[in-house]
Image (cartoon, rainbow, N blue to C red; front, side):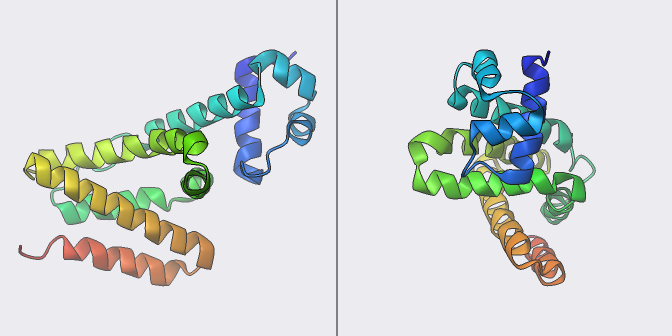
Length: 183
């Protein structure tokens, strides 16, 4: 017998491999070794299953980040470390899920935007806190954290879509250097 936690873990693996867009309970159930009726028994609905899967993904994002920029001494170093984490092989599936949620949120914001925000907020919060620790004033830190995250999101999308890691990584390094230039 599968527990709800085991099913959530297995479903997250399935979502990493197949995405959310055309998620159907029967193929998911078959892939995780149960039936669609058992999924409904454990979760109550497909929507609740998806919510639990996204909550687990959110925990993974938060746990995986740690304090990635704790040793950063400049905003440039914060960006460089964030980019390293965002493009690490172990975060590839989370990055793809995050970007899929971005696109789904554009099409159906009422359904998907809250999940997208939950995956985004830990990044935004961590960037903001690190910039404040580097003595960037509060309002500027808020704006800069948003600029950094949105720029890296776009670069990550470019990297995943084109597969041109060398070009996009060079662009990320150039962006980081912009933050080191005098104001």
